[in-house]
Image (cartoon, rainbow, N blue to C red; front, side):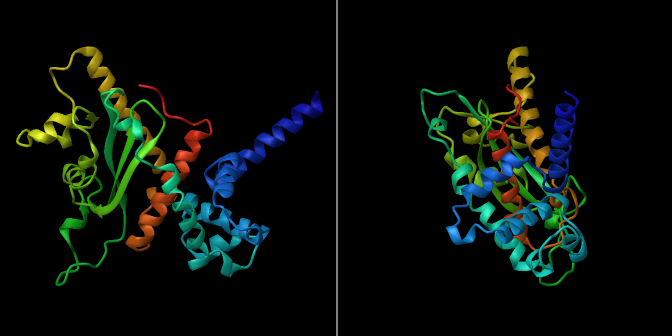
Length: 281
């Protein structure tokens, strides 16, 4: 019995160390690896190490090559630059499989409340995009009071499923404007979207008909339902920010920002599929 208890403790300790390095359980990482559909000759131990280092980068976001190399068992050139982002790109490419607009969202016989939506801001070094000035106010996030990239995330209300994401947008762009440009066009007539008050626009009848924002006229049961749905969305966005490359200030360019955030959201969907779902509403 003592041996079994010690063996269990060692296993639990190893799982904790693994999560501390890569941000997910071994089962999640293994499932992602298997879904990459690598050719037989690509399924090597060296490629597996590079794949793991991509997750180490997303989870810890080390500030220099030395920190990356310190945790690598392979040559330093395999854990930085294009060697690194090649594997992040492969993880991101699973978005086509894991983040899809499911048919039930358009089914007239399915639930009326279909999704929650919200934007999440990622602090970043300000991109030098203005032709004349070294600062562009449109890049500034009202939440963080500094330059940021913004992503739009939508979840199914009644299933642990990411069904939409888009971005990055400039930090100063409003959630309602982003919603109008893309996701709004996918919502079928009669379906409702749960979101916060920032999506309200009384002058836009089409938007008002589909947007289930907080209202003082909601009965208590509906009020609690909407509140839990919005909290569930915020909980998921919080999981995104558990990755240091999101919680820290982003130091790379816009294209790599999009690459990494999409890889993270794909990974979070795998986590929900492996026993880490969001709470029910």
